[in-house]
Image (tube, rainbow, N blue to C red; front, top):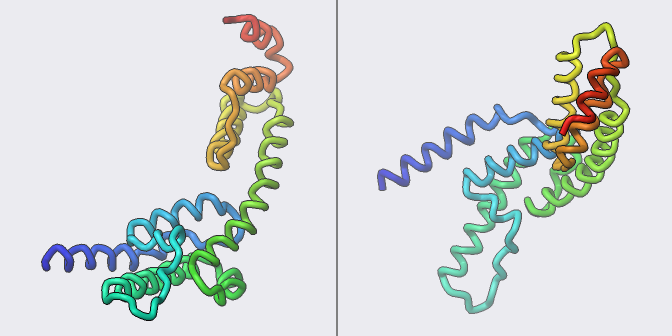
Length: 186
């Protein structure tokens, strides 16, 4: 009995600290989605995003009724947490969804499509980036590192040799001799 009270107290504390999760305003969907899924998993209600609601049967057992009620409660909690994680404008748009899964799927459909566009933008930005003289090479290298970290966040994979070759090609024009020596090293 003490363990259950402790666990529910911990879950309440986690839920009360929910405000620390940034609200989805349309940007950084993948990051928000991962954080939200972690929260829902921690609360042990994420399963409603993957499982169908147990059907009602005319002669169902008490256990089956309890299982369906448990699913309904988890779905309600899951829906509430997802909606609470949305900006006010998105909350107004999605508040009338029937289940947490339908809400989750609609958000994925909308923002994963936009994510494809942002992936194209990131790749294009990386390909067109060129280091220039007059700025610190290390600062410009950090800009490239940020872009490559965004690739990881968007699950864009690039061969390491292509990355290294691209970075060498992005060095400023004044580094011509150094670029040549790097390209010909093994």
